[in-house]
Length: 206
Image 1 (cartoon, rainbow, N blue to C red):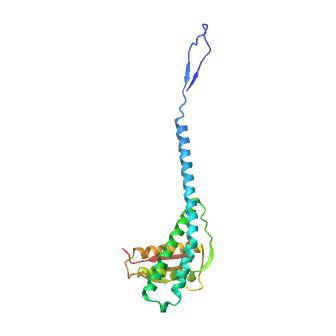
Image 2: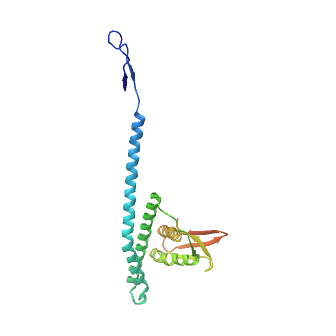
Image 3: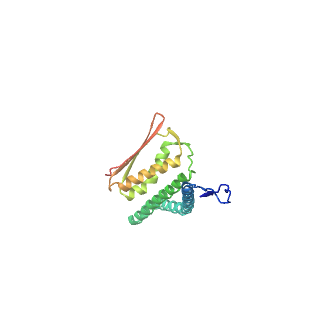
């Protein structure tokens, strides 16, 4: 509110007064909204940095656990008691699931921060299929599932971000195992349709 006083009259008294009122409610509300948004952005940024840091910290011990359990699973398998083999498979299964979870957290944080970048490379499709089959085997065994994989021969190649593609397929396989009844089949089919790479995961869940 700004009072405007006109020149005085002959008796040195104001002849009139004009009051100008400026409504700044919208500007105040806009400023408050901007402050609130900035606070949310800062909080989100801190949360993303924490998740990224935590994910990296968890990856190192996870890699060690996965490597050791893989080694235990391969060596002297015939000399171990069935209970020991089963326990090793349980550790492998849960380590693989935790690795998927950590990678998911890391990628989501990168996506929200706008730092997730695709790195396309040329790779052999059959090699990816074999990698997926062997990596998923402990999870499939833990749920008493049988995985059937069909893929092109060794002469077929694709260009994509192999690691992101592998992670996406592993998530699909993991979900199929999680929501399918025991002693059922899971199918992974990979094929080339003209210039496109097609991938399907099929299970016998509800």
